[in-house]
Amino acid sequence: MTAPTEQPAPVNPELKWYVLKVQTNREKSIREALQRRINRDGMEASFGQIVIATEKVMETKSGKKRVIERKLYPGYLFIQMILNDESWYLVRDTSGVGDFTGAGGVPTAMEDDEIGRLIRQEEAVNEPAKIKIPLSRGDLVKIKEGTFENFEGSVDAIDEDSGKISVLIEIFGRSTPVELEYWQVEKP
Image (cartoon, rainbow, N blue to C red; front, top):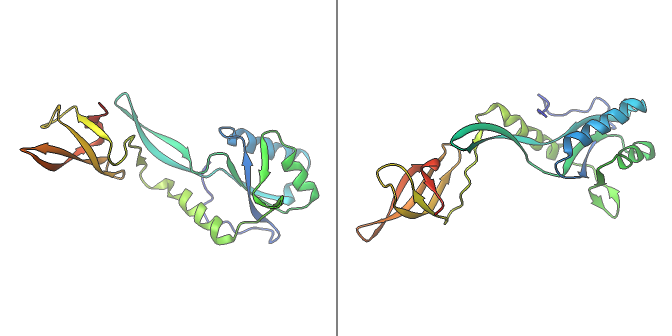
């Protein structure tokens, strides 16, 4: 889901944002089920937006780059609603919904600045997609292409924005950093 274009200012000042624990990998179908139930029961006035926080990430599989949408908080929905017995029951009685986050079984509303940060983070979708690099600092890798082909070294730094990594390889008995594209290396 794409984020709203502005800071979420509730139309109804009674609408508050809550965090809802749901079954992982079913966030979209649960959001749709909630929206259907809200419409069916005529409770649109008690509900605002239902948001799945996502970001776009560039992923390379089999040498092909593609942009995927990755959930920032898997297993959670952010729901704007007026909390009363009817709305609480409608949400809790929806298949796949776990519980609201909060202390002692009482849902806790999110602060406006918290949800604002979340929405701004999601609005970064207009920026270029981040590159998902399946390596971590310290990983042992083998260079499969370029001047240092077949050299082995360890990952020293990762720049996800540019898709480049720095690998420490040993040349003439010294550790030397070499900057490479992430796809030029593989785990041995």
